Amino acid sequence: MIPSAPKRRREIGLRRSPGATKGQVHIPFVTEPLLLSGLGGPAGIALGAAATAAWARAGDLPRVVPPGAVTGGFASTPAIGTPAGLYPAVRLSPALASRRREGRKAPGGTSGRRSTARPRAVGAIAPAGRASYAELMRTPRQAARIVILSPSGSVFLFRENNIEVGIHWLPPGGGIDPGETPEECVRRELREETGWTDLEPQRLLCTWEHDFTHQGIPVRQHEHIYVTTGPRRDPVPESPDAHWRWLSQQALATLGEPLWPPRLADLLADAPAGPVHLGLVV
Image 1: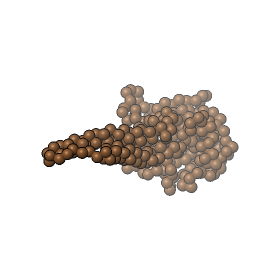
Image 2: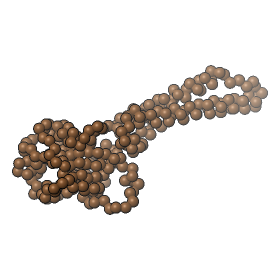
Image 3: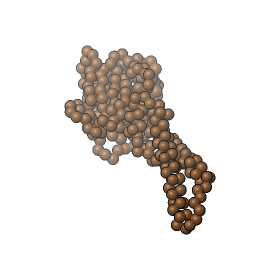
Image 4: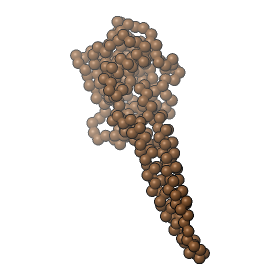
């Protein structure tokens, strides 16, 4: 039972995605071992009584089952089952950490540990058809980002690394908190990630969906991408190791590393009249 929490991270993610609280997720980890130990206690007492009777019959001895043994058997089962459930429930905290960023940045502008697997390509529209088992197991996640354009047209982006998709460039933003609108989310994320409080989302540029691994849990993230204008200046990022840059739109088009969203350069070069819905991009 003790290692069950790390092995059930996907189940935890599926429970958390509709809005379950940590306490609600902890309940199965406590009740399951209590139920098993509660059933095992009477079964153990019955087996012990049967073994005592058989031994007494074989040795022509009186059959005696001490009441203290029966009481001790019933009392010991919750004493064992409760810690067995509470310990993995406490270990849930890493899996349930609601960090909004896709990974903590490491020196050099990367975030998280480097993946030994070859990152998959980003930018292709997902083909229509039957969803794979892996896709069905991904946890839905809502996020919002904001593209900031300087007066000269430069774009402010962060450079990050993800264990599943590798190095990529993306605008400030992150996961939408419960009860929060996408616009409120980008204001908060912009304040947390850059220290800027004087910018407002001006219009919705696009929406898109993509797959990646967030805090060890495979997710399918739906993002709102907003755009605004602001002065070209240095941020005060929440991480001192954050890798950021103001990129011209020409540099953006020839960056050579994946962008989130992948069509960002095209959408900025030829601004659409209304929001563009890119769908699932893999």
